[in-house]
Image (cartoon, rainbow, N blue to C red):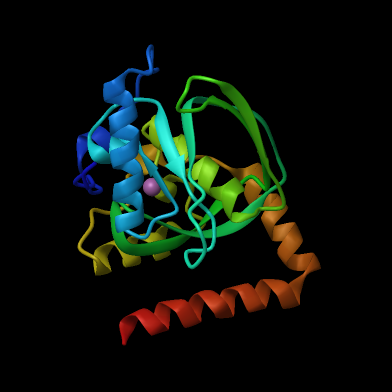
Length: 211
Ligand code: NI
């Protein structure tokens, strides 16, 4: 097993569509082990093959408590078969060192994929839990999409990217998500206290990074 180099934003491979895995060979299994090791080494909750320079439809996720035992889930040739609801999500990506911004996501997702032994499984994630957001984030990588394409505020996102010496948001990749945005705004209007608390927590996180 080895720790692989993580590709950074600006590299063309992150914008390419990844290919289906046709056979789960020894080489593929070794790649998956390396991806897991690389993800844990970087303290990430998810990693897609394109982020280590392999254009294959594979991602790994572990949303378990970092202090507890590991709980890796491997997704090969995943398909999102159901999605609903909308949520605002504060995200980063291992290909964007330190840069976080607020993005739009679905609240609930159901995904179908193959495990490392080629057996199909279905995973459901609800209520905007970390797993739901991580699945969407990693799935996007397989189609050359990045979290900043879902940003709620392009100017905020650009400020953060600039701060960490990363290229700005690419306009042609921005995703039109009026429906999600509307649903998020409605939720914020109906739950002003919770929405405010969320904003405060993000600000606190941002400020603590500056020290
Ligand atoms: Ni990512």
